[in-house]
Picture (tube, helix red, strand yellow):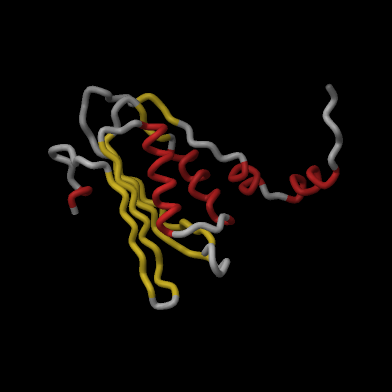
Length: 146
């Protein structure tokens, strides 16, 4: 069956920058853990996270920190960057977005340990830090205990 021509969709895509197109198609990609027999920690910091306040529509800025101890899978970092950038036009609370990121990573990676911290910049004289964490912290896991 032939695809119908949609000039509005075509024009929108034509005017998008390559980064906007990449973010629009963002999907988390997982890789096999290259060292599955070893316990090690992966710490990722994303200092340019943005989303929109669900009440006012103003932008919220945060540092998203992801700490995990992989089991069989690890996250591919470029796909993680694009996935996190996909929230920039989404109206979502600090609590919801931090929990959503945690849930998606937990589902995809099934790590031995996972912690996601949303450290949001002050707005209206209020600073928020949201931490979502696995129930147990493996022995010897360094930064997650801090």
